[in-house]
Length: 357
Image (cartoon, rainbow, N blue to C red; front, side, top):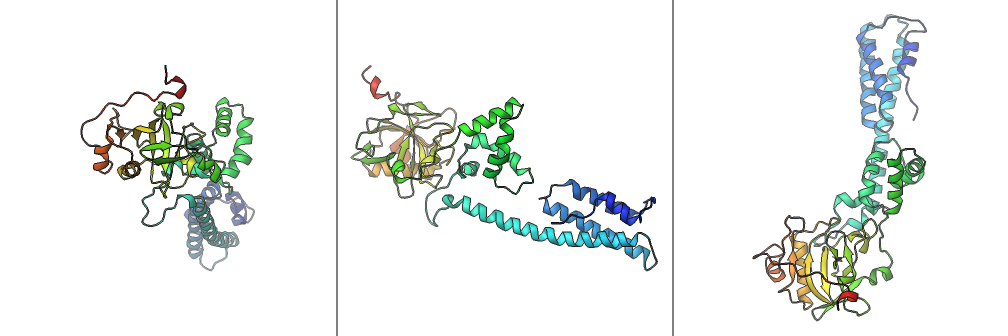
């Protein structure tokens, strides 16, 4: 896209090579608009177009003011007016092209987030959408880098820009903070399970009131851990077809989003399971931020599969302080919301190796 003159070039052409005092308000306006035009980022299409239109109007006013009489400035004014008018049209078309391209990329990137009309499933919270793009950098590391990318004039998408520009620069930077960010970014890549075999190995079978692994062993969270609840807990999600998946939570490596590769879920949270028996369950998931309807869905699934909810500690609102647990049967009957008096949280589920201690 060809550029228009700078203020210095315009002065040279509109002064016919001579130094002439420029007290005319239209000329001052054109000088100002040219400076502003070249100061903004190349991709600031709307701002650049606005300055072009200022130049067009100021040129028009100047030409009307001098009328048909001869002027050494006329050729330069006519030229800058034509340049600005052409550029305004180019910028309008460029903005539309970029908008269409950005829309197509956005649609492709959010394909896993979409849910069918009428579905009860919920997509990931927008705070974590950036994690979905391969290589699935953890959101807490990616956020400041994403904000930096938005301010650049690059045409590259986020991942290409990180790999080709940001990372090479950060790795050789003398700024220890920037170099540390590069190490953290490459270290914190979240696993997204796309192979059916990998997903199947984490699928739970709930039957006869007990939770089993895919291999038929009673599931036991004493050998698992989560960043929020600690040892003796595991994270879980329930897919739109009501399959339940569970594993340990590893910050920056394995999140709730990992099970379904960032896809929507019917429920998500954390649970404590002692040799197949569910003893506690929460709606804790930063990626999906479950509401009471989602918590109700997992309790309904458990009840349908024979789990006796009475005696199970349920926490519908794990972010509240102090954290409160209620009898899961009462929460279920209240459609996933707190009900009755708080109940104590059962003791920590121990690892199988320490159960006899």
